[in-house]
Structure formats: structure tokens, C-alpha cells
Image (cartoon, rainbow, N blue to C red):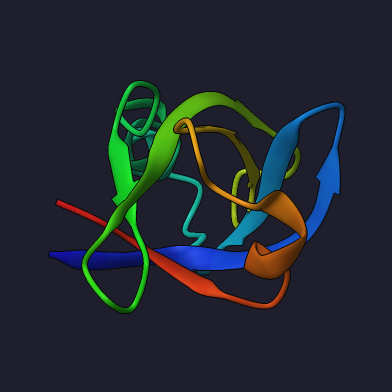
Length: 86
């Protein structure tokens, strides 16, 4: 399991995360490190499934990720929470 980032806000039924920083040396591996995040299941601190990453946008060194929540997940309670990937 690895840390993905923290939820900074909710918008249009999605949780928006600010991903942890990558080493921005300009290499192609920086871009690929977040491209494979689409479709990834994310979990909260209690290892409960929260949702899946549906979009990655913003700067390569620290992009934002949009997560579509699973049924029953209360979006406002996620703001400020750290999420993890399997």
C-alpha cells in the first residue's frame, strides 16, 4: 500500500486529491508515475475502500486526482483525509 495524497475539496460529486510530490527531474518516469493511477482503488486510514481514480490533471510534479466515490461514502467527510492505493 502506498500513500496517494490528501483530499483538498469535493466538486461535482468527486473527491479531489493533491497527489504527493514526485521527483521532478523532467524524466518520462515522472509522468508515468501518475498515469497508472487512473482506475486505481483508493482506501482511507481504516483500509476501507473509498472509490476509484478517474482523472489526473495539473502539474506533473504534484498533480491532482479526481476520485469517484463508492456508494455510501460521505464526500464532505473526506476533505483533509489522506488516501492510499493498493
